[in-house]
Each structure stands twice: as C-alpha cells, then as structure tokens.
Image (tube, rainbow, N blue to C red; front, side, top):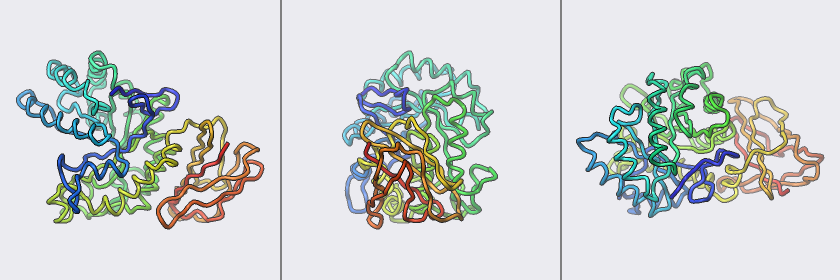
Length: 391
C-alpha cells in the first residue's frame, strides 16, 4: 500500500486516504494475548491503534531470520488494518552496508503492511553525520518512492536539530516528562508536562513545511527501577500531552514504553506488554483520538482565520473542513483555572458542540455570538478540549 505526505496539511496519506498515525513503540508481542485471552493485536487495532513500530537492528549474519520475522509482523499488521513503522537500524546512518540496505528495502517495499521507514534514532543526540543520513534517505527513495522515511530526535536545541531536517520526510521528537523529579528527560527549565508542546514547536522550526510526529510517554529509562521511581502518566496527563503536541504541530503520535518489562506487573510481564496501563490510560485515550469526530479534527487543515483565547496560557489550533470548524484547546498552566473566552470565529456561526471524552464528559452545546464564545465550564490545569462548529 502506497503512503505519501499531503503537502497541504502534513497528513500521512495511506492507500489514498488521510491517516493520523496513532502508534505503539513497541506493540505487544506478535501472536500475543491480552489478560482475557484475546489476540493482542486485534485488541489494540480495535481501539484505534493504526501503526506499530518494529525495531530490531539489522545484521547481515541474521538478515534471513529477521526478514522472516518482519514478514510475519507485516502480515499481521495488514490483517488488522495496521501498518508498520519499520526501522532500518544498523543500516540507517551511512551507506557503509549499502548491499544489505538495498536487500531490505527491495524485499519489503511492496508489502501492504509497510507504512513508513524508520531512519536513525535520535541522530542529533548521537552526533551522527547528517550527510550519511541524507545519503540513506536518497538511496531509500531511489528504491522505494512510495513510502516516506521518518526519524525521531531526542529533545535538543534547534541548532542541533536543523541539519537533520534534510535527512527525512517526517521529523519527530520523543519527550517523556513524567518522572521523579519531574522533567528529567528534556533537561529544560520547564519541568511541567507542557514541555511536550515546547519541544514539538522547536522541532517544527527546523523546517516549518515538514510534517512532525511526536512520541509520548508510557514509560522510559528514567522511570526504570532500581535507580528510578516507577511512575506513569495519568489519563489526564496523557490526554493533555497528546493534545498539546497536536496543537504544537504533530500530525502523528506514537506512545513509547508499553513493552518495557521492568515496570510491568508480574501478570503483564508474562504477556510481554503493559496491559494494566493500556486498560487504564492508553486504551481510553486512543479510543477518543481515533473516534470519528476527533479524528476529523486531527486531520483537518489549519483554518484560514485566527482564533484567540482570553487567557495567555491557553494554546489552541483552529482547523476547518468543508463542513466544520474545529478548535482544539489546552490549558498549559499547572495552576491557572477559570473560564476562558475564545474570539475569531466567522460571524455567522451561532452554536457549536464540545466533543465528548469519556463517559463522565458527554457532549454539550456551546453558544456563539459575534464570533465569540465562553465555555461555561472553567478550564482547570492541563484541561484539553475539542470544539466543533458546523459551517
């Protein structure tokens, strides 16, 4: 299945249809089971996961066995309506092993389960030569013009990241701010979870026209025992971080760490995936983001007008389709609270709807007057909301 980037929106287009990637890095084991005995990949796909990362460094000595494993995973992804984000680790930063890179790409490029190639991991942090990555990108494109290549960076200054924008079709960043003490991963002055939006915006500045993917936290090395305190994002935190990244420009989200056995319960460790976190946080968040109304908002192009908020800590994105206008908003402050007024909608809009999230937050109407509306419910710290207005 061919995939490409829509230059007008930054959306991934797969099989001719726009897709907002919601992926797991890494997914449950192939042919694994949930605690209830259900097929693991059926479970995550039904909840709205449409991408899975495959990361296994390639080596010439084991390439045949690796290829068998990859084909099985590609088959499984396609069977469940998913695609793989397939790492070229081991051959991703120079053409020193061009023959193996060529063999891998030619063997896999025609499989409908392939979505995107994964280039070098965190190359700026690893001080890899950008020229080597550009050479790999150009060679992959020469063999396979039908699948883009994405690289993911660690949080770094803009000057470090800029040279790598030319080495990928999709530029991404990983950011894991939930830790004890807070903010260990980014090592920035902002220790709040709103650092997610900060680092996503920095990456977008590297090449404003380039699509951005943000990789968010389930778990990471900074919460692994015994040296660190185990802590996971709550549903409210995970939800805020997802929308903070989206507002900052992310056109795809991946969630890292569900496969890290060190932080699993003994029961989950047997099954090789953090089903406890999945049940409590990741599944409800994924179901919300992939639901028809929210998915339409995430895929919508930016609106040709500007919407503003009365509170300085409100970040928002206004988007427009042929029949709808969406306003996605978050309160980035960890302490501010109160009602917020939004201005700048087209004057003819008279009403809208706050989209639902979770069983305790049903949809509710929003009145609009002269392009302005005030949400009747105060914005609490790290609230995230999506509004829809019929054009």
